[in-house]
Length: 81
Image 1 (cartoon, rainbow, N blue to C red):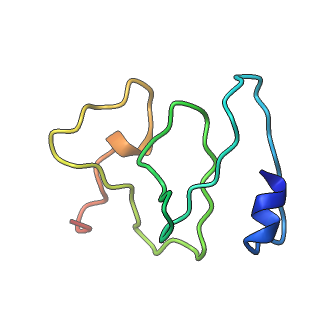
Image 2 (image 1 turned 180 degrees about the vertical axis):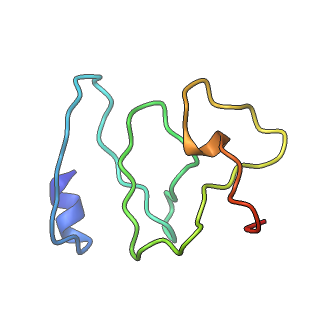
């Protein structure tokens, strides 16, 4: 995974193995394998630019709430809707 990230232009790379035996992957916007809303394995997300003030993670209406606390289940800030 580290070599793939270096080839696509990353300057700094960290490859972490939590011992779950899940294969490493790279999902990148605009490719055949775009990022998913969530993964079974631990995932590290990288943003190409800083998030704007009051940014929040969007989740579709009717989606099943997470079983673990996450920002997906927190409402957006007032006035940001």
